[in-house]
Amino acid sequence: MAAAAAEVAPAGAGSESPAPPVCVLVLGMAGSGKTTLVQRLTAHLHSQNSPPYVINLDPAVHELPFPANIDIRDTVKYKEVMKQYGLGPNGGIVTSLNLFATRFDQVMKFIEKRQNTSQYVLIDTPGQIEVFTWSASGTIITEALASTFPSVVVYVMDTSRSTSPITFMSNMLYACSILYKTKLPFILAMNKTDIIDHSFAVEWMQDFEIFQDALNQETTYVSNLTRSMSLVLDEFYSSLKVVGVSAVLGTGLDEFFVKVSEAVDEYEREYRPEYERLRKSLAKAQSKQQKEQLERLQKDMGSVAMESNLLADSSDTSALGPSDLIMTRGTLDEEDEERESDTDDIDHQVTEESHEEPAFRNFMQETRMKYQNRSSH
Ligand SMILES: Nc1nc2c(ncn2[C@@H]2O[C@H](COP(=O)(O)OP(=O)(O)OP(=O)(O)O)[C@@H](O)[C@H]2O)c(=O)[nH]1
Image (tube, rainbow, N blue to C red; front, side, top):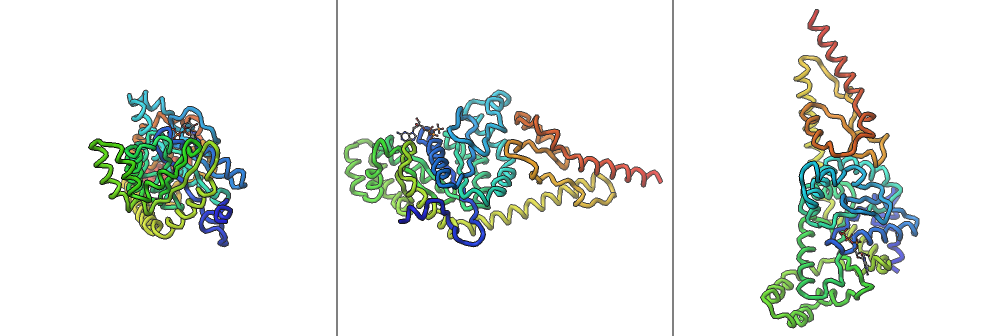
């Protein structure tokens, strides 16, 4: 049975080296059941002896019902951010995510380290969905994940609140916009099937006439628009992977993992080449930036020759744990130092000193002394 095969076997399983983990980005409107689904998936994978790596990206969540390996709340104090920048709740979430995104390269390193032990990386996102999908940080995080690991989006829909054709259509339009925004394989998880079976929604997607019949009960202008929209969305529906689940009961999970596996195949086939290109161009831009920084430094130091390999490697996070994330400091020039001070609301007290760059500072001192000695002779 396909479901059994999907138990804990992501795409690529069976090959010699372990398959890279699959990043499952869970998105959906507030209250659709994202957190409950992540909790359920985590428990399910644990029961299959395949513990996932779990990341919480919601800075405002009060309580997490699952143990997160990386929790944005450990590193960015959402309430402090609101206070310091004079922001409301949504602005606070956006800014917290932006601060976190500036150090997402470290998150990537933690995931990479775990790639032989976790087959799935589950990522819970803020309820204010637009905060993630329409912010720069959402794009940075999605692209960072997808350019390294097979990644899929799971859009969670509250099926019990989508029984009116017009609400259903609004939800689908939203889903469609997210598909275009994230540019990743997309699974529609119709949640809360313990309240209502999702078959009515599947029929609406598969059979235009049935959807029209349901719409005939509505006589507003919106219903005419909805009629036209359902034709437009036909293409979107035809390529959509749909699965009914109950996050509370844990039903539909086997089929869920079958869909994830299909989505991973789709990622490998259609999305990976594009992300590889993106990764290469990012790496090129990064090395160019590093070179420019070094050149600037060299200019500041006068004619003293410097060897780049003497610079302490600020990217080495091997001694850190996920909770130390983001606090690593280590800048090559004052401009960067100043920029960093904007993130003072980040709780870096614990690790700040230990991760200063003593090697680099010593090097600067030594070089300066050499330079002074030379010019005095
Ligand atoms: N009946 C039923 N209720 C569910 C299911 N999944 C979630 N819920 C309930 O829906 C409510 C919202 O669930 P959450 O998991 O907090 O939803 P969320 O999308 O993470 O919410 P935000 O963090 O606000 O975005 C809670 O009361 C859950 O118990 C389900 O499968 N069936």
